Length: 187
Image (cartoon, rainbow, N blue to C red; front, side):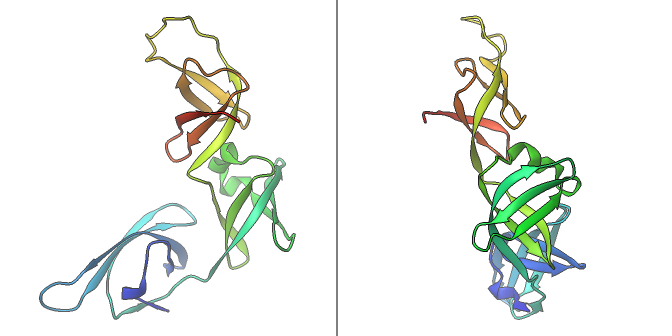
């Protein structure tokens, strides 16, 4: 159990039998009455958002989750395969539970797995990731009718719009929340 006043951004709470991650927290102390915490939570399982107002002295159930740093090994037809970096334990995550993660997972890279009741419920993708351009069309110099961008495909299959000067084989930094090009990476 955790008191409403002790809840911080990033806390995991249990609501309706599901784990929720606190994404926003606002503390409010009115002139009269009890201080409250307004929180916005996102379900780790299905992404739904829940807003609550909790008096700071009230206790709420926190979800007991474990976070493990794991190396992505490979994906087969049914699952993603990870290995814990500390104890070499293997984790299988069904692709059907997190199909949107497939385009961001790169072999050999480390990701944080959130585990609740022995089951992986989230793969945390970094905010920005470096990808290699696998497919890129040539452009005609001076062609700005398309807003001076073109679509490219990364080694994982992710399609992103980039400036015309980006070529096949180059490394680019992508914002994974918006799927937008950030910059070319010289590596």
